Length: 235
Image (cartoon, rainbow, N blue to C red):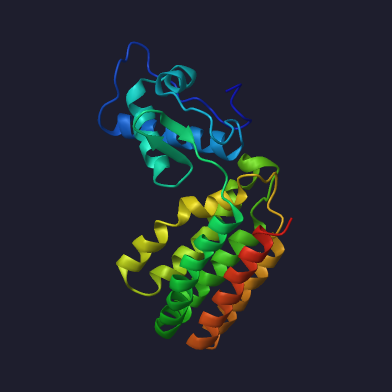
């Protein structure tokens, strides 16, 4: 699988340790998860390639246990697939049809989120939306996944904030289940090409919140998601 991509640091195992326990174990599992996520997003492992637990454990200098746990978490994002006979493999890239299906699900959920959150919004919440957009605006957009992962986090944080604004924790959990699949929109990129468009579309959503127009907030969210799909499927 080659050498780790720039920015991927292998978590170190303390001298003489054989297994991680408690908070230490959770910490190393998180570190392994982040390292594997960067490897997959940076195409350090090609789509369809085998992900052998012990090979990855040796590479990262940890036991097999946190690697298995990290791979199971990544399976939930769609970046990793598992079969009974073949074990874990890097998932194939999303097809145009799958991208359309992903955005279709978001179109069923997120305009409603925006409408409900706008109906409940106060000045403090609108200020938080402004701050989220500003963080996205100033986040780096590349090169490589290590260069734009903070941008992706800021972009997604805006959508999470809108979901939180509904006051419904089940909506927040539903949206969170999309996150890993949304990351895959950028799996083949060296930089984020549509940051200006995305920021402008988020600003349009916030303007609807400013004037407390739930229908306009829903419409602006729909325009944004349709734009995401159009840009993702343009050669």
